[in-house]
Length: 259
Image 1: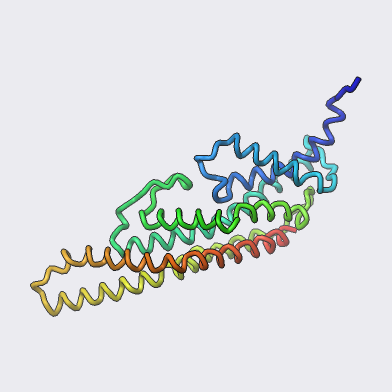
Image 2: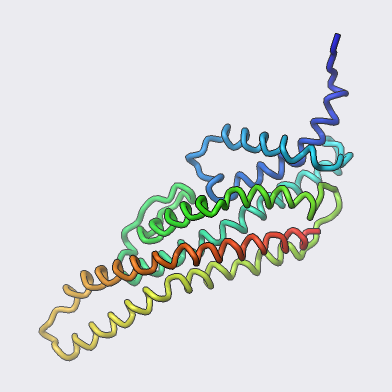
């Protein structure tokens, strides 16, 4: 008769627990997976499936869950998973930042739309760009690359109770610059065009004071801004693909910095 005891199951639970903890931290912070519309049970089921695929290829850590080393190792798995998900979120924040800048120049800064991913309100242009890059992220298999990165992270930084390096955290702080760098690069063509338009309207107001620029300026700015946004859409896909390639290359640098 086959009998199972807790003592015989404990090594298996101990072996699968650490990868599951890192993957759960990733799914709780990564784009797409962290959406509030996705049920928590689905996230847990996806984490368990990913764990059962990844854990058999990993060596046994020998770290007991209910121990001081287990507490240290658990905190490290949460930090690594959150760091990976947070780093990928930066490219989405950069695109939303570009949308906020463009919306402000177009006069749509007051047109706010609720963002379910962040739980806050954002300008309608930023929301539109966020939806576009979310679809592009799925088309470029970004969700699969995320799972590949978290699987490779166990080779770059295995499960252990050793202290983590500070270079990984510093690299995450440095990558925060892409919010302003890429956001400004994406919105620069539209911002420049609208700035030239505002200068032209200002000159017209000085030359012909009888022309009411305040009445004509808003519809003209809105029309020119929409036309410029439609032209920017042609370059959004390659631009976002370049951002994805850069952030996924940076993830391995961050993981090496942790080690």
